[in-house]
Length: 186
Image (cartoon, rainbow, N blue to C red):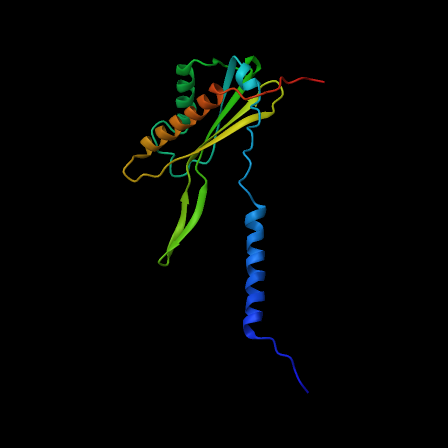
């Protein structure tokens, strides 16, 4: 009985064509990602006049002996915001348009295993949540991680992270959101 055997090169050509066709589909189907327009920033952040700064405590293991702790994040943030002068700082949330809740936290970060040794490191950070004082809804938040630089003291790392946090706030307030809707209450 006679069997028809396709030449090996024919099978290789079919297989190669199939691979090329399959791998080129995602490349041609996925073009450059479209730029996503920025979502509006809540208008209260721009229109607010008065701010209450709230001191929320976090985990400070490894940082509790730092100068001024545990109230240093609150005191330093309050002083910087007062010096900026963008908002009038008030002593009661009832009198405020916004509440800025500042928190220093030092959660345990990922474990590092290297050459049979390992352990977890802390990841110090500032967290800031901006609340609408009237509705108590959170409007915006920031997290500023400390940059580990072994030549810098913890005080310098603390100050650098605080400065970066305030710069982020200033950038947010300085660039009004396009087409930010005016909130309406039904």
